[in-house]
Image (cartoon, helix red, strand yellow):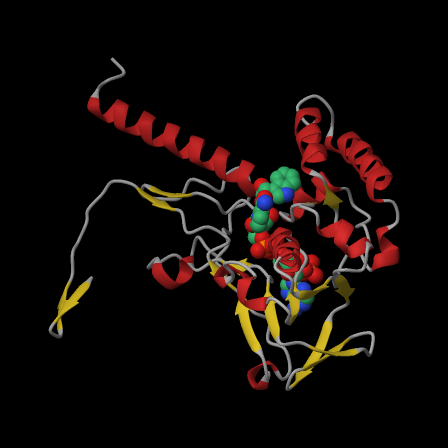
Length: 271
Ligand SMILES: NC(=O)C1=CN([C@@H]2O[C@H](COP(=O)(O)OP(=O)(O)OC[C@H]3O[C@@H](n4cnc5c(N)ncnc54)[C@H](OP(=O)(O)O)[C@@H]3O)[C@@H](O)[C@H]2O)C=CC1
Ligand SMILES: O=C(O)C(=O)Cc1c[nH]c2ccccc12
């Protein structure tokens, strides 16, 4: 749809297939925290974060300790910001080497065994992170990834800065009063800026007409893995399996193969 001088032009495309690829990480979400609307500093979502240049010398709080939050906290520290990060729930921290090793092991061993080995190695490397406000989940990293879609954090250097107390860990936020942020442990700290690395939501229900049958209130597929990627009437869904990049890759291949087999049969290439 395009507008020129108040005339709305609509272009209509017709196709046999439609691949819904807006995915589960479509629009950044910022939690509804008491007092955020009257916050006395600047706040952004992690998807607006470019680098920490303008935060040099500032007190900055990163909310969220997924891969975005942990990477941004490290970048802010590198740019000379006085950096803190909110870690309100347990999280697995691994190095990229541990992840690589685990991905290889997962081809030969059950997930439970890979989790045990990976957690043991992570403990050897990082020892007791609880001392620094980071708890390990009771369930294993790859079990959690497979069942909940939460990826273990790949440490880019943040943990060593947390251990040396150059990056401070804080618990959940309770409320905001001007520049004061009150945490669930009762501590109140002033911050000049907040980066909300609090994740994303799906937007498919906003743009795909008639998608309510296929997608739930959260814009996630009602059908579950492994039957989720094929919809009705030539509609396919990629990137909604809560299985990270691997899930996206397998959806893409399934969809491409399905479209290929439908078109080749229709065109008679299979004879
Ligand atoms: N290098 C890489 O491979 C990278 C990969 N990614 C991937 O991109 C996807 C999106 O990542 P990301 O942007 O980090 O989002 P995620 O959804 O992975 O993480 C969101 C984080 O925000 C926390 N959070 C949410 N609400 C609040 C709140 N009110 N108060 C405190 N904490 C809160 C969550 O913690 P809680 O558990 O408490 O809800 C969680 O730690 C993921 O799949 C991630 O793995 C992203 C960056 C780099
Ligand atoms: O595939 C994902 O979910 C990603 O976001 C990449 C990623 C981050 N941490 C990981 C740990 C194991 C495998 C992939 C990832």
